[in-house]
Length: 400
Image (cartoon, rainbow, N blue to C red):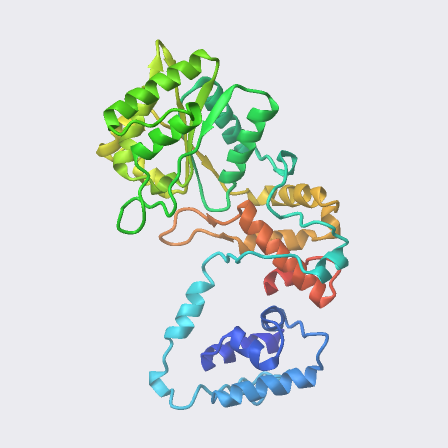
């Protein structure tokens, strides 16, 4: 392990990254990470070959360490040529600051070799194909039921969650549940391509777009009036007719954090469309945490909306529930949890995706959301198959 620590220190002094070293050696970055962090050497290359390659790599950068692969105590590390007292530590500080942040991976896919190694015939972490694929924590179950009650009995609801928390999955589940239970509910989903909260960066979703979407869903054969006042009256009448025919209506707006303030204010007017004491439209906003700022009690511009809108938040998976989540999703793929990842591996995964609170940060920063966990697991499984490990271990998680 001493060699790995010395190599990591030498790389930092050389101002070199693991990606550069991996490219020089002709091996994967994950294999280099396992070597540097856990002293685990690649099995498909001779150790002498790897050692000579690392030595040449460091020598080219003027940071040769004569005892790097020895077991002695000496360090003998020479910083890059011309460093002296003015050695630039900016890159080193940047690397150390990155280590303080939870790691998120881009979209991952199971490699054919990984499927064969683990005996998988489907990706257990792929986009859900049916409602039964959805793992329901107490938090997710509550948000799911809040959305359902909003559809059945009316109301104004905002569902807030980080990217990958499962917001879109819950929307799809709601639509499928309406169909399965034969509920007479018409879903209206207005959108504009490239929606932003201002017309400089993109296009804004205006109340006129919402009115057109409502009319298209409720009275598709009617010609939409040009005047905004006449269009609103037309929409109100069409909703009354639809309600008298036995239908309820739910307006669902995704990416609601991109809604401009004027549109948020106008949602109150849509919510007030009624027939007697019956509200004709219920509203569900689905967005990322930025939506909370726009719906803040301190935002006087939308105070009438804030007083009428219930906000529910999709929290991250609790570290203690991570094994349960993995077991469920792997079970949908026909595998037992212990056949894919061991207990230390689960703990290491939770540690990689949760940053403990520190000075200036009151709470842990967790990225234990279904999408992030799934991507990390796929990367770890691919690495395990590459290294010939029968299961994902803590060392393999550390090497991702």
